[in-house]
View 1 (tube, helix red, strand yellow):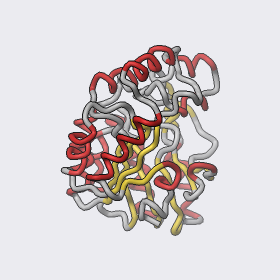
View 2 (view 1 turned 120 degrees about the vertical axis):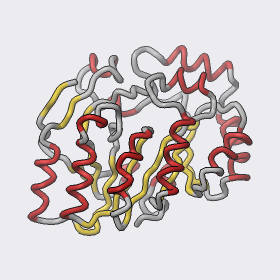
View 3 (view 1 turned 90 degrees about the vertical axis):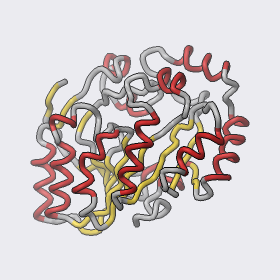
View 4 (view 1 turned 60 degrees about the vertical axis):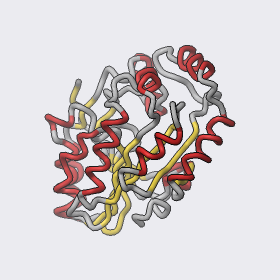
Length: 267
């Protein structure tokens, strides 16, 4: 882990997140290290790309940069936390940088906030999240199969743990969504859908795992594709799974539309 000073903390969004005003990333790198993560390719060196998941840079001046916005408060701006890192990765437990940023946004601004994470640690900040007028937590849950999860997300919490955490957030009265992005092979679509429906959450986003696009980090592509092939996962299987999921989760959205601020219902 290293500390660095960032030049800015709020980045204007475009493309996939164009319906938001800014993205906010407290960290560079991510110790969850999902081997399909697109964020790895924003790393500035080949070494960092190849070692994705095993390094992290803390934006030491993140709070200081955000306090500068007090002169021109963020009123009705829509912020995505976070686009190229996880705001609740393990180091956050001790540093509490994300929590400090949330407190700053609460005390001095009036923003709409979307939090994207795959960490149960988000439950720690329920007390702050309940105070936002407009906030939603998206929990990434990719499969019901722990063998698959360990192959693609070996450093991440189990999907069962994530479901329990987002259910707790939802039960605390905080708007919640389950993000099946990317959707990896599942053992039982019916059982998986029932598990998600049992959380009481009604918002869902899904996106296919595009095996023919992009790259994998740390030379994982070959093993990952072999697993996909062995499990018979392809576009047709994805569509069949989505059809079953919709039987239990009728408000499930897909792709960019599902991620839009308007679609998730916070703007």
